[in-house]
Structures are given as C-alpha cells and as structure tokens.
Image 1 (cartoon, protein in one colour):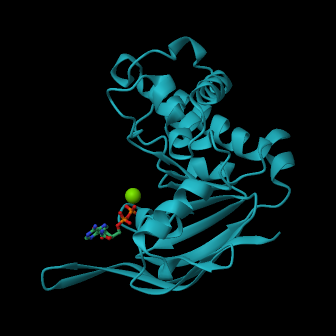
Image 2 (cartoon, rainbow, N blue to C red):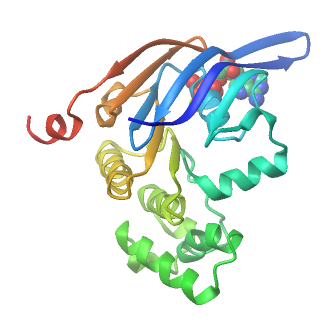
Length: 238
Ligand code: ADP
Ligand code: MG
C-alpha cells in the first residue's frame, strides 16, 4: 500500500518554564493510503501531540513530516491552514461544534471556507446529515442534541469535503458503550466507502479492533506496531 504521510525522526518538546517535556520522541512512521491506523497508548503517552503533528495543527521541534511530497515542517501557518482545509477532516472528543449554529450550519462550515455556493452547501450538508442518520435534527442547535447526535454532526462536518485523511482524537471518549460502537462503525464505514485514510487516537484497546494497523505509543515513542491481516474478513466473519 502506498504511503500518504511519512514522519522521519519527529520530536516535539514543550517548554514549561525551565522544564522541557518531550511529548513525542524521535518517531518515524508511515501512514498508508486508505488504512485505518490507530494510535493507542495510555494517557500522556503522546497520542494527541502526534496526531496534531501529523494533521498540521502543530509543528515539530525536530524531524520531517511529508505529505504529498511536501514538507509540512517547513510550511508557514497560512500554508498549514490551507493544507488542512484541502486535505484533512477532524473529529474531536468534545465535538467542537459552534454552539450558535444549527446542525446543518455546522456541517456546511468546511464548504463556506471552500466558497461553495449556498444552495449546493445546503444540499450537500443535508445529504451528509442523512448519511449519519440525523436529517430530522438539521435545525437543532448543539445543546438541543445528545452527545452521540452532536458527534454525528461533527462526523458529517469532518467528511463533507471527502478529505483524503480524517483524524479523530478519542472520538468516543465522552460516549456510552453502545453509542461508541455506533460511532466507530459510522466513521470507519464512511472512510472505507470513500477510500479515505483514517487516523484514530484512543486509549481503549477494544476500539483498536477497528484498525488495520495499531501503533502503540509509550512515553512519546513507538513501542511496537501491530498489523492486522485481511481486515474486512476478520471483522465480519468471527
Ligand atoms: P495523550 O494524548 O496520549 O494523553 P498528549 O499528547 O496530550 O498525550 O501529551 C503528551 C505529554 O505532553 C504529556 O506529558 C502532556 O502533559 C504534555 N503536553 C501535551 N500538550 C502540551 C502543551 N501544550 N504544553 C505542555 N505540555 C504538553
Ligand atoms: Mg490525548
């Protein structure tokens, strides 16, 4: 499988006064096109920092991050913002919906940044809400929806541009078990259908069942990588 992102000796050090925290320590990793890659590790192992580096939300202290043959560590903030709009979608643990916008309006946001005309925006956002099973909540505000419903809206928003890579940081961290599996089925199902690459952060070993490959982190380093063979069969047969 072709690599979509390459990390070479990536390190991220946070300075806290006189103290230095090495959140990601000399990580080299390749993300394969169309895979579901899970970053698994305990709290504080550097999962979110690594995800944010790969997604262009943060810059490394050292090392190289190459996406589409471009060096992300050399990009300016504007170039990174542009890159994120073009190629990536995000799902966060806390949904990150805009509280004053309806479900439909939240889903249209990425299309506004891309200057898609209003009518097309609304049609496409409605289709996405249908795809996540929320057409009947289109005009609800986030506070008028359950956690699971809010996460469905944020999933619809993340996928509406069919970005090449979707990043999810503990997407089910605030949800009950049943909703967690519904959400994981939804995210991985959408990604497989559209041949998108998915990078998911979790501390939950059970959720890594959804992954084609599990990258286990410990103290900012890769502890080991587990490959799963014939994923679709092993997930459906058993
Ligand atoms: P995880 O997502 O696996 O829980 P994080 O990537 O959030 O881990 O954090 C890894 C380490 O880096 C932790 O020790 C954390 O306290 C530290 N860290 C994360 N973000 C920052 C920050 N913005 N400033 C200082 N330290 C940070
Ligand atoms: Mg985290």
